[in-house]
Image (cartoon, rainbow, N blue to C red):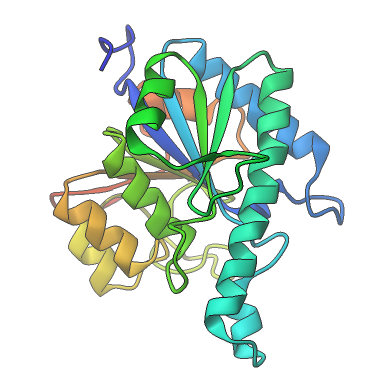
Length: 248
């Protein structure tokens, strides 16, 4: 891996975006939102950070929801994987309009529109300064894109997973519904699992715990937050080893 960019805590990271992060004004994929995200990514890539992304597909199709309404879970999940690919292509287009070289790699082969996922090729793209977008989850039903993010992060040697959300970290209860909700500055993997905190799903957290891969949960809607996280500022919630601490 290349030397650490000056003044930054990480040189290679994986950014996890939900499909819902691309929504706005009633649109499944809002051009203003996706362009803003692309500008944020460009800012940090221009600093020398190697960045990969995993994006969900919930703005287009949610496999779990369809399964609860009677559709076979495997079929619903495969449809959700196709939704992530649509989002990945939209994000690729927006990133390339910012002047970034990108590659989309899919866990299900779609050679006409993307590369198949090959770990060594993905790492090589990152080393050459390209942004790599991983689509179609793990390629298997019954696994979420959170789990795909943890898996891909470990495979490419990412130093952290940046989990982008619409709130400024992990809380002891839903801050949108409870005025007395308190934010954690730091959460241990075990506490996140035992308390059922909405960080990532249990499989994803367990994978990160087994491999000591930290997760940083932050508000993507605040401009410059990715850069602040990479500089080591106290933004959002750090999920990793050690004690759980409430924010002051």
